[in-house]
Length: 414
Image 1 (cartoon, rainbow, N blue to C red):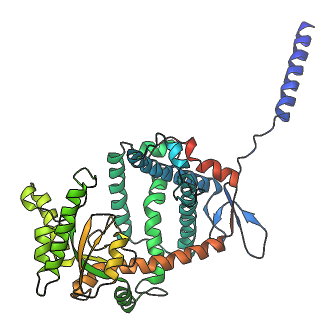
Image 2: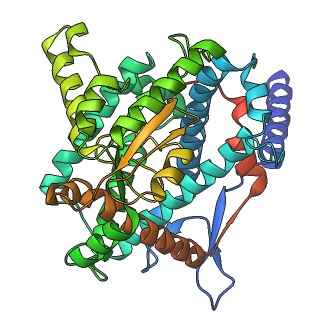
Image 3: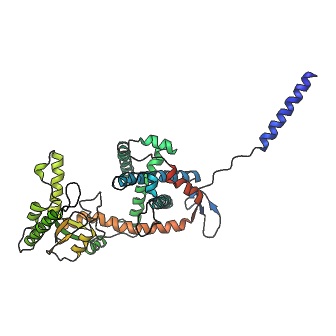
């Protein structure tokens, strides 16, 4: 009888456990980041990114992972800006930086609002280009793949050296593979380039011709050479009134000489311009060579820039824009004329206008930049069309939570 009572008790316990297990609720699935309307004639939606044939390109989970990556990567880009920014302004922490307005006229545009917008733009550009690349049946050549690998390896090496992080470790923290990292950072750019070439390349749907490039060059490029005299000391502080007047008097004298008939402006650049290196003060063959190339450029070519003020031939990697005062002054000059202007950057500039067609090499030097400028504007319009056709909708709660820079620690930041 004791055995039967024990058995009955065990059966009661087992029944209770079965009942408890059957009543236990499964955890609610996490909400998706984004949904897409399948067609204009249907209200049916999907949380996956699909190609034109309905095949899944990225799952809902993969889309959220990509958005999380861009949120972290761009957050850290802004964090690096903060580190630089805080050296010049009394901003003690990142949160204060994020709440700082970018514009004195519109206080609603803060670094944080711009960051969130940049994350959305980067993510949408990434997925629409990935979809178009698939829909058009495009692929990379072996040469493309080698270049992609080389670019990726260089980038990984640079990241590891510049911010002290290990890309492998960063990927682990973000729960992504290095192949995903490579796709987000490197392949996405090559994918855009491939799409651009498909539409606007030599054999593209709407090719940008040599005539288009030369027309743009003639309309939008300006050239001058300059003698630049600094109005600040070695510490960046404005000169005293007495010293400043000496610089102004010197600039007036140089300008008068430069305006004389037959004056050798290039010789005056060598003699007076403070943006030219004194090679006798430089050591090391590589440094001397770089300084010589710099001097030769500004002596022989000068500033050759487009309507946005970018001196693209020499500053191909930095894209530094010229001060607006200099652009305004140069716009009033005819070839051979000389003027001077005090600029917000550099000091006093004595400038002389030069012909952009003096040499075919001048055009050849900026030809690729012109093609990139033209096609970039046209490609951005295409991306907007693809974005509209994608017919997507964010779950704003999920999106805003992922994009929140204040909840993250630096991964890609120095």
